[in-house]
Length: 307
Image (cartoon, rainbow, N blue to C red; front, side, top):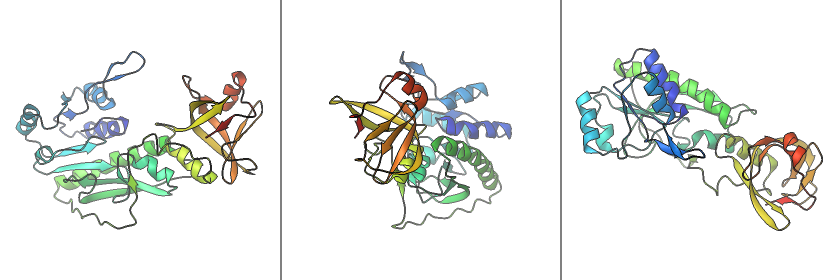
């Protein structure tokens, strides 16, 4: 059970290792692109490529859907980047239902663990398998694999690293379950836990009077989706701008946070403590572009600023 690219590697590995995949559950096709035509999920495309049965229920409690899965008499359900499962579904398999999560649980429970690990400046994360229970990401841990976060990593590169580690961990976990060696341990709660809530307009906005390092981490953590954003004020008009990559200059800020310094080849923005060089930016209705290319056809004025 899965939907995005992160789950495709696991499905491919299951087929490669000759597991008997009875079928794949994924999200219904959704409108996407300029034409808003219905598009299948990445997992559906992969499943059809392997000639596997695919189910796309709107409701995971649909009686016919549940009846179909029960009749398959599955040993185990493998869940990767999917939605919350009702108990009536996750209790079907004889050996349980386990989930692959892209953090070292109990840290970073929630929808966006890869993003928040980078946003918060972590130097280590990982992947964890756990048996699903009634709450999100709280079930008993089966196994985990740690993964370092390098200073040059962003959400895209970390996603790919964790996807590889995750495929290895799923196979390891399945082997343990098959041989009755999956000795799970309850998660321990503490007041030191960090969460990974859904990304929204509020928590993806750049606050320019923050320290430069904090802003760099935010932009790194949102580079693939949805992109960190700010408001460009020009001639008393406000437009939403997305920034996908910045670089520290080591230069101290001398202007109000959000103020811009620009020449023909570079665009610097002032923060609470340092100036940052903007490397990739997206204007409204345009593609994201390297700043050198953008400045060939667009000029920032002295009075322009980010807020």
